[in-house]
Image (cartoon, rainbow, N blue to C red; front, side, top):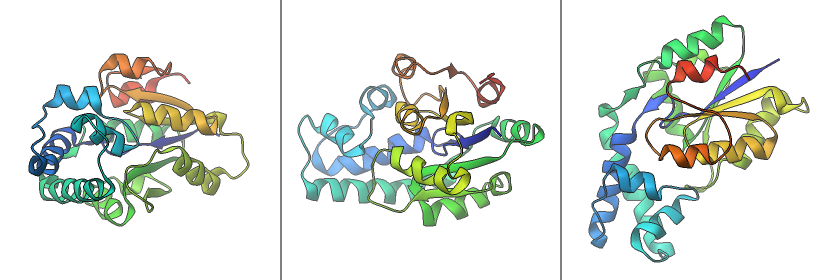
Length: 213
């Protein structure tokens, strides 16, 4: 059976504006920035530490990386009330549910904070599993997707799994496990960066779930 694995930040959850603001709060003490949305699109990547290397124009130290990550998440939490699900998130989730397909959520947002946030947004009931980050911050999603699917489908062929995300890292993760991927052009990356992954790129979440995989 086909299954949809959703990304959260930037995909279902429209938080790009608060992400950029939180980044700026994190880098301000170092005399870097502020950055705007275009600079964020140009430089953002995973591992996230590499993103800060790009902004600083040099490798950040381990101490700096720890402080940057902490300041970012503190700022992000303070700004959460200014973000909400994308306008068509519920429509897309309902479309998948109506078609009888199982759907789960995999995010690199800390697990202990992800669950109550998804519940607060009224979306938890759509998912048969929700997994967030429980390891070091800023890593690639590939191994987390592998573990997520190991629980959900076991040894079943993942070729029928469709990952819906908004970053090249989502496409890399899907390729790592042998799943399919559709990328939502949410504005976090230049579209050319998304298209360079070779997977379908769509303009809305409803378009993402309407894609004939």
